[in-house]
Image 1 (cartoon, rainbow, N blue to C red):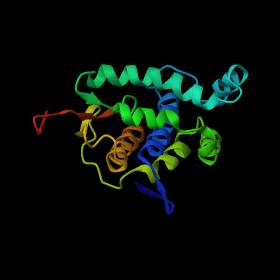
Image 2: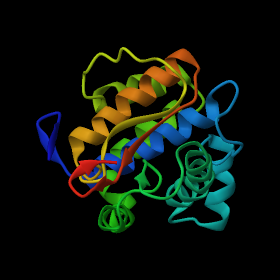
Image 3: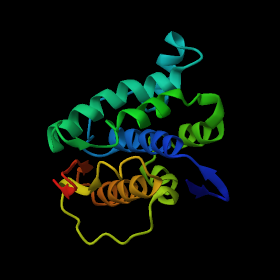
Length: 184
């Protein structure tokens, strides 16, 4: 677990917040990283009519499907994990998070939708603080599958996304499977 303003945060909650921020940033980037319109105020209002109690979850799920497809095309599907396709045990934990347990974050995020600088400010505390030297676009390996369910590794992913959105270069951090105890 990692600290979030003095409070312990689980990998599932960290991943959930990181997903929402990356989805909102991906939609607001120029050009957009994926062509959805769920993570903006208009999209959320539309979803509120269909899913009054779970509109935010529906927006993250719908935009997440598009983001997952883009990431899969960039990094592959076999032997890798990324923010939108994590190890199954972590996916189950992320899905089980109730929006009511993270209302403050959701409200803050909604107030920043469409404002890339404010969304990047929200992303900054999730970054691991490591200075990234590689600023190339495209797939970027940041660890192994055994790392993927840790807050530290997700913090590295947050740093990669932060740099990518700052530079306007679509970059896709991923975790590769270990094979026979050796990085694959």
